[in-house]
Length: 252
Length: 215
Ligand code: HEM
Ligand code: SF4
Ligand code: FES
Image (cartoon, rainbow over all chains, first blue to last red):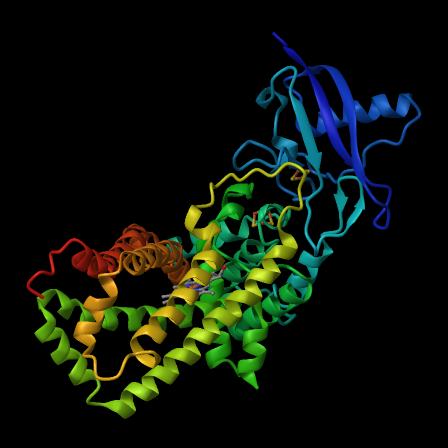
């Protein structure tokens, strides 16, 4: 049996990065509870288009929780009320008929709003460019398992590597910090032997870039950990702090 | 200068906070140990005080070092406080998933209270110390005043709240977060502030309640 709900949406509308934005209120009827949150916005956008109005701009791609493109702050929570769930995987059965839902973009000094719910998260890309990679010589392919790695370590690295770069940690952090994202990326590479040759430079240059982009500092509020759709642990931030200290004390 | 570029970074500032916090904590531990002599009576406390001031140069050097560490902690703390104000209340609906503790929310304010307390405290027992009065007697004199004692007790509560977030936060900043030790750390972040509260806060209560009759 399909059940449907009626909703009031308050959505942040902003023409472009220079314009002043404001909330607009919309009424949606007969939304199937089997829909995802993004499908619900699709329905709204069809309605708006039919009325000759500008549809709500938002980012999305895979719609299966693996690409990191989607994301908005729903009733004050990044990616909405469901734990370890991206916005595209959030379902309307989490809401009740008659609910008013407030939808805002991911806000941070380092994430300028492009339009409506669409924000520019390229600052995260520039942190990766600063050191979130390993340099590999071209030539014959190296044997896959030539350097043994213990299962525990491989699992920890995989946990860190599951970060999809969505930016929810930044959006939810009271300080607008990108520590969870940067910590996950640094941890992932520092755990594996392939990441070791560059690890001293890496922590320093990625953190320096992170600061340059305008992200805040960490006051250990743990909010990011629960907003993260991939359940990345703040243990990765501790690991980054160690890497950073080592790179400053012992690095060249 | 590597240290300058170090404290320019966000993590560097936090590490300054954590290191100065740890040093202040170590000082507090020694200070608590010494002051606990009060519970043994005025004679023993005076012996401790005289012993300590038998090394005037060392006391001076440590005092200056402590002042520097303290100023670093307060200075960087203020920087972080003003940076935080830039990012707060940016959403129309503010929801915290993790209820932020009273302690973490009030770090700058409990800190500011400790700051004021220390000015009063240092003035009372160091610079403003009346000539010719033994410190063991001075303690008794001060704490027989109700409001003076109350001010001390409130300040030690503020310190305990500060450390309730500060202790685990410091370890996390140093990179100490491991499933094997996290249970211990969450116990210590309550126990350590409580121990300080009992030892320090007990002193004014000791005099106020008259348990110090034989002091
Ligand atoms: C005996 C006195 C004090 C001790 C033992 C102490 C200890 C600590 C410790 C251990 C931390 C945690 C550091 C970290 O998060 O890595 C901390 C943080 C902090 N302290 Fe203190 N502190 C003292 C006095 C003060 C004073 C006087 C102030 C300010 C006027 C202050 C302001 C702060 C602030 C704002 C933080 C949090 C920084 C952040 O948000 O990350 N503290 N303190
Ligand atoms: S750490 Fe989590 S919340 Fe932050 S960018 Fe990665 S997946 Fe998103
Ligand atoms: S659209 Fe890819 S994670 Fe949501």
